[in-house]
Amino acid sequence: MAKKKDLSTGMSERTSDVILVAICAVVLVIVAYPLYYVLVASFSDPYEVYAGKTFLLPSGFTLDGYKAVFAEKNIVSGFLNSVKYTVIGTIFSVVMLYITAYPLAQKDLPGRKALSIFFLITMYFGGGLVPTYLVVKSTGLVGSMWSLFLPGGVAVGNMIIVRNYFQNSIPHDLIEASEIDGCSKLRTFFSVVIPLSMPIMAVMVVFSMVAYWNDWFTALIYLGGKGTPLPLVMRNILIKSSASASQAATISGGYAELNKLTELLKFCSMIVAAVPMLVIYPFVQKHFEKGFMAGAVKG
Amino acid sequence: MKKTTQTEPVVYPGDRISPAGSASLARPGKSLGQRITDNWQLYALLLIPVVLTVIYKYIPMYGIQIAFRDFKASRGYLGSEWVGWYWFQRFFSSPTCWRMIRNTVLISLYSLLWSFPIPIILSLIINQLRFHKFKRVVQTVLYAPHFISVMVICGMIRIFLSPSGGLLNLILGTQIDFLTQSSAFRTIYIASGIWQDAGWGCIIYLATLANVDPGLYEAAKIDGASVFQRIKNIDIPELLPMAILNLIMAAGGLMNVGFEKVWLLQTDLNRATSDVIAVYVYQQGIESAKYSYSTAVGLFNTAVNIVLLLIVNKVASKASDVEFV
Image (cartoon, one colour):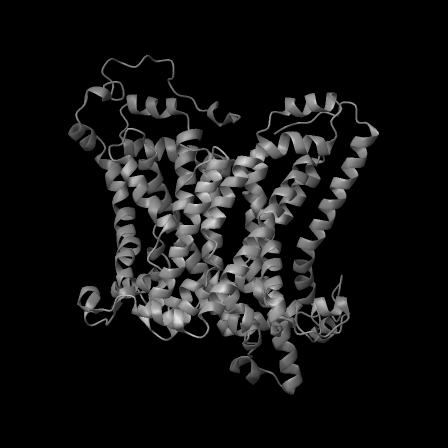
C-alpha cells in the first residue's frame, strides 16, 4: 500500500494528524464501548450494573452468569446446533460458490453470458417470502436442517467476487500451461485454481460462517421449533426476558435471585454468541479489501 | 491494480513453447458443438447450482401468480381461482396500509440519508491516517459490529435503552422507556444500523483509495496542499464512481426495510412508526397462513423497489458514466 514518506512534515501536517487521530479515537470509543460494556457487565452483579456502578470495571465480580449459560440446556443445545449449521452450511456454500464461479470465469465457455444472467437475475428479483416458503415446503424441507442451506442456493454477490478473482488474480499463463500439460478443466481447477485462490476462499469461508452463525430468520420460518439455533434460543432470553423452567428449579434463592440470574444470562449469552465470530474475522481482515476490489472490477 | 507476489514462487515450465495444435490455440477453428463437448466438465459443475436456483429461485417467481389467485394448496397454482387485483385492493383498503407504506419509506429514506455518507467520510479520514498500527486497529474495531448477529444487537439495544438502569438512561440521568415511544423508533433503528455497519461500509471505499497513485499525494504535498485539500481534490473524485454505484444499489433496496430488527424492536406502543410492510408480510404469510394476501403485499413492495432502482439508475447514469443495472 501507499507508503507515505515524511517529506517536509510542517506544522500544518502535524495539526491535521492530530485532528484526524482525534476523530478516529472518538469513533473508536463509540464503536467499541458498547461491546466492552456488555463484556464487563457479564462478569458483574446485574443490580450493580443497573444501578450505574459498572462503567469500566466489573463490580461485584461473579462467574455465575457463565455457569448458568453452560448449565442451561437450551443454550447449550442451541450453541451445538449453531455450530453444526455453521460447519455444514459453510462447506456447502463455499463449494457452491466455487463450482459456480469457476465455469463462469471461463471466457470461452459457450453460453457463459446466458448462465451469468440466469444467476444475476436472482440477485435483483425473487419470489418473495411466501412463494419461496411454499416451494421449500413442497420439496419436503420444512423441519429439516437442509432448509437452511439449499434454498439459499448460490450467494450470487459473493459468487461474482470469486469469479472476478479467478479472472483477474490468477495468472492466465498458469492455467494455459497446465492445459498444455494435458490437464483437463477439472484437473486445472483442483490443482491450479483452488490452491491459488486461498485468500478469497478464506474471505468466503468467514462470510459464510458469519452468515450461518448469526442467522435465525430462516430457522424461524423453516425449522418449526426443531433444532433451534443459538440466536433463536436467545430471543426468549433477550427479547421476551423469560426465565426457563430448568433455571427456576435450580435456584433456591427465590424470585429475586432468579430475576438477577435472568439479567446476567442476557449479558453472558450475548458474549457467548458474539465472541466466536469476533475472534475469527481479524485473521482474514487483510484479504477483505483485496477481495472486494477483485470483485468490484468488472470482468 | 498492483500485482501481488503470489505468482512468482510458483515454478512451472513457463519457457516451453507450446506445441503446435495445443488445445487453447486450436480453439477458434472448433465448432460450437465441439466446444460444448470439450467443456462438459464445466457444465457438470454447474448442474447442482443451476438446479437449486431453478427450484428455489425461479419456481417461487412463477409462484408469485398466487398474488392474483385465491390460492388453495390442494388445487395448486394453476387450479386456484383467479381473483385479479382483489388482494391488492384489500391491502390498500386495510386501515394500517398507508401507515405501513409511510413507515417503510421513511425508515429507508432516513437510513439512506444517514448511512450513505458516513462510510465515505470515515474512509476519507481513515485513509489519511499515517500511523499504520493505529490505522489497522481502527479498521479492525470498526468492522467488529458487522459480525454480530442482529439478535445480539437488538438484545443490546433493549438493555441499553431499558428505563431501569439502561446505559443511556444512566448517562442521561433519566428513566425513559425509549422503546415505547414511537417518536424514538426511527432514531433507534437508524443509529444502531450506523453503529453496526458504517465501519463495514468503509471497506469498498478504502480499497478504492488504496489504489490511488502515491505519487499524486507526494506531488500535492510538494505543491503545499493540506490534508483537507488532498482529500477534496484527490480522494473525493476517486471515490465518486463507487459512491454513485452504491447509491444506486441502495435506492433499489429502499423498500427493503429489514424484517429482523423491526420485528425484534417492535412493541405495541411504538407501532405508529414501527409497523412496516416486511413484518406484515411475515405475519400474514407465515403466522396467519394467508398465502395469497401476503404474496400480493410482498409483490407490491418489490414492484416499488424495481421502479425506484430503474429511476435512480437512469438519473445517476445521466449524471455520470456509471451504469450498473
